[in-house]
Image 1: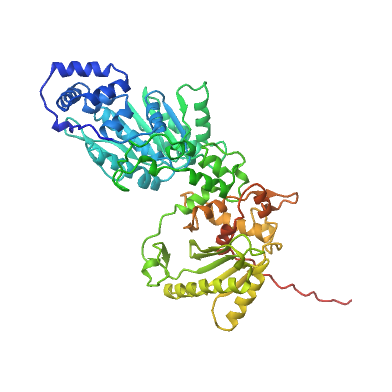
Image 2 (image 1 turned 45 degrees about the horizontal axis):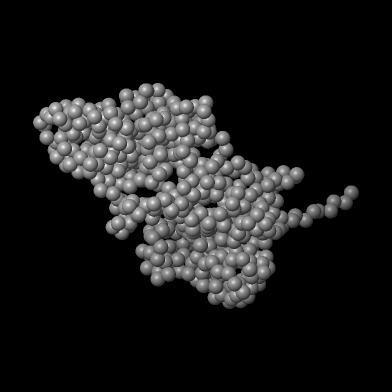
Length: 584
């Protein structure tokens, strides 16, 4: 879509035109859609004159798009919009609160950045303010504001935009902040106070993670007659009755006319519905010239894969596909939001960290960061009957990856499986030496079925000095050796202990940081959040069996269990003390 040639304010002619003034008056009386079409038909000299008069009479040449954010995005930025995006932008002209529960891969941050650009431009400098917030400052800094900076640069908009702040110069030559990003600490209601402006737009990104205190304090900001809020994000899968869920429910109710809810499901994507996008060429900096808007959006293949990996009724699919709020989310042993947090952890920096590909090892080509001296451990999940998947995972300090996945008849042959594990052991030992790690490579192997033979072979090869790794057999069907009183969740068997330990490692702290960085496929991530947890009558926690998962249409979580085996350290059995016979 081609943008109108909109001169910057200082480039507009200073002459007065009664004809142009009359045209502007007539334009502003039109409905936004009609005004948009009329602007598009103006000859460039006439458009320049109208914008010049708008700058004088409305305080900004962009004032001709006041009340028409769709027109601003399409005609000023020259960007294409699809139906749901148009609906969201239009809603901020009609409602104080716009709640958008959204699925995966639908351009949530992109459309909010366009709303910020619109709001900052259509009001005179110094009379409007846009604020963006999210649960974490890194989300504000690394997700929302790159989109805002791109909109400013691509649309040749006035002012200067840095990492989390946009300034424009007012008629007196004073720099004025027209938009900025920040985050407020949960439970600190004062963090959202003291913000006032006659025309205020608040963008709450990643709204599913906003706590009730901060959520409620947004009301203090929206007291003005022209204060608006867009709250947008994935429905949380680890929390029920959240602030965001309540806001969305308000938008569905006639009792709250100032709030509207626009559900943005993955199934609404033009790549799924077939909504016409042939004329919607994307204006982003990525991709080939002329690529379509729909190329950035979630497609039917992703939806099918999500359902296959998580299950049709899983909290993940309910939230990320259907944009609905899951019920029974607490039944997940590892909530999908935690898995996502681990997958989105930033790469560490600083002394002592190095990229794998910089270590000079031919088989290490990834750019993930690893710590010098970091412990290298492997997790091996072997199907009991050679079916399902044979998986080898690796953990280098906190970096979790999957190094091998295969299925087929060969996985029933203990010798072939053991040789494949040996290949990964040798590779891990090379990495260990290059990192300068003192601890030996430690390999945890599920011993059920073929696993017993694999463990026996690898232990014998260790005695023969074929490798130096420690081979640790793990029978997940055994009772746990850890005392129950040491666990918040009391595991019933070792498999339950394995998953509970993984839950602890993947639980984000107050800053959203997990103890493991997941660099795994979407399928592995899906498996990590697929099993449910239950409690028995004795107060023990147990994890849904693979058989029961298959019965509800969910794949066996072989990749997930291999990932969890790598950090898992089974308790060392203490020898029983022999009693002493005392004679009287």
